[in-house]
Length: 213
Image 1: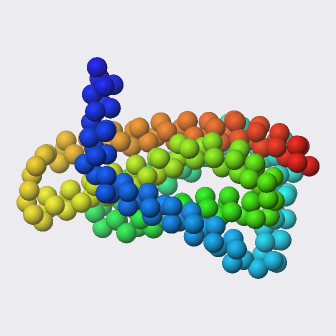
Image 2 (image 1 turned 180 degrees about the horizontal axis):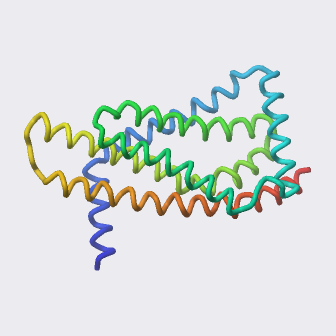
């Protein structure tokens, strides 16, 4: 019953703020496209330098010297949680709305650049590598970033409405509690994504590297 209630509230929230979620999603996709475009704008020397360091990394992955799975899990988890946490805090600050949008765009740009560069330099092999190294954790991280950004924007706009228009439709404490619960859920998603990145991705990458080498 509790799960059904939560599901109903979540669906209702998405419907009520569908325009915000659509805007955030489009902004993220624009970041991905921009990141892919940057790859094509790089000169050959820049591509060769980056590809050299990428090959060194792939060599470390293949040799198993890139780091332990637990270290990679912790690095991934805390890096993404700090990034998401900053976006969440900016939602409380009200004035952080533009920064939230910039951070989301940059996240999309990094994803687009990573996949775009791998495919540009390695073709089908690069696509396979991006599929196993970028896709698994981002299937959870991308929704986490979109939900965090959207709820931060919604929360910030509600605070502005209550502060300047004096409309107290619901208590600030109730509003903040729901906002905090969203971040708890986001933390869980980030943890699962870090498990993929720390334990599954290196294993899959090692198999692909051996297959294409």
